[in-house]
Image (cartoon, rainbow, N blue to C red; front, side, top):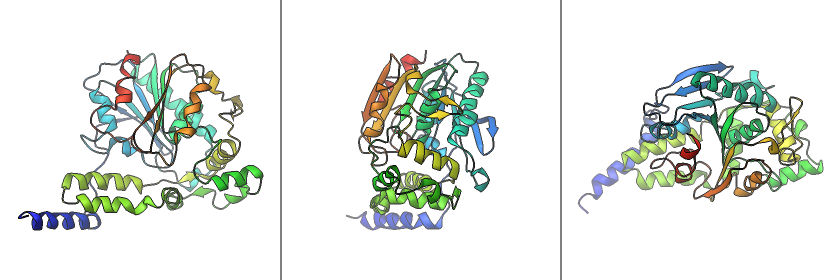
Length: 343
């Protein structure tokens, strides 16, 4: 008990430091910009221990900042990939502003993702590539893969909303849209651009009542400076929403949320049918067992629609961000699957 006062002093000092000191740095892994378009950047992370000829292209979500994949030295998914012998490319969509209100899903799939794949292949001089999509980035990556002419060796889709037959959140909204009781275009007429603040509170509605629970976790372990730094980095990401194009939002809500067109094989992108049956790459679909935002029923049936001979569905322990945040080494589901398919 002699250490109790010192421990409690550290606990409360570190707890209040969250509001009185600068946040720890994020995104520290060395990288080079390969290509830029509008707010987006294709970043290249060179492995000093390259053992695999097939590079990785990571496609993160549109609603948060991509630094969750590179939180800190020793706590970075990108760094872990590099340590395991992979060259890594990251498509970072950046932070759209009201001038980007007319960007559509078609634009993101063709002008951003497809172009990024081509740039990464050219830059790496690789014959094939692995595309890894997270959350909504996984949805867009899957749509792209159904249209792709590029040589995709592996497609990995992590906690991605694909099947909207049974939406877990905002189900009353979605059902009202399907019945025609709620008009999406009318709902989103003003604004045509969804601000970061609006995105933040929309996501907070989805995660209630757990929003304040992470502060209790912080207080419980605030005597541990390393834990506090990790918490602050994650909290910075969790509150760092970016704006969203109104055009893309309307399209996602109508074509996916309302009509489930991708799973129903009726989605059209730039005049071409985006059919999951066109996908032949080795496929790994991953869901989190405690994911409230994108439960497994939104992704597990996707593998039944693709033509890939090598396809795997995996349910891992954890929530929505588990697959993006590095633990101890490469996650087992990747360590068991990816290396043998990257030679």
